[in-house]
Amino acid sequence: MAVNNQFDIKSAETRIQSSSYSKEVARAGLMPSLSLGAGISSFYSDAAPSQRFSADGTFTTQQVPVGFLANDPSQLVVREQLVPNGTLVDNGFRSQVDFNRSTYVALRLNIPIY
Image (cartoon, rainbow, N blue to C red; front, side, top):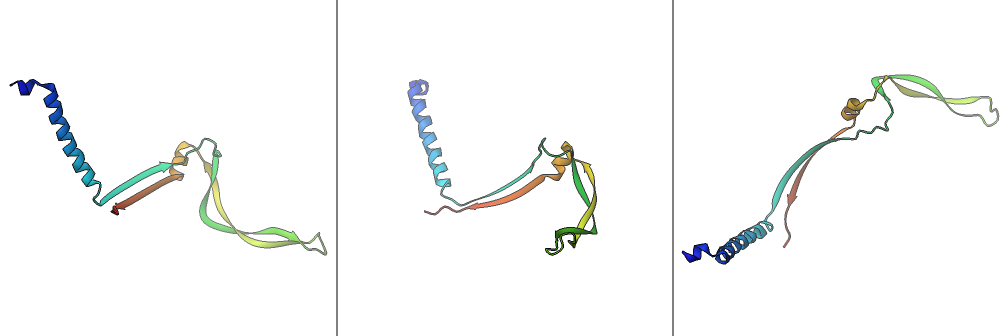
């Protein structure tokens, strides 16, 4: 009966039990493990422009100046370039969150080398 009331004895029994659990945890650290993680984030910034260009999938061919003739500077040299068509759309909070969304899935295998 006195053994049940002695705090020192109860404390020692608890320490023995705790060290047994610590041994099991240490042994588990030597085993291979597999973990899965996933996440989603957005790169919202209040410094972003208030509007952004939204392409509609079509293109227009435009002539773009690239220089001039060395012997006649009044003669421009041009080339054709495809330019996407589209409109400017508001770039508010919700638009930025949707547009700048990033997702990932990660699978990690940890094999300890002894």
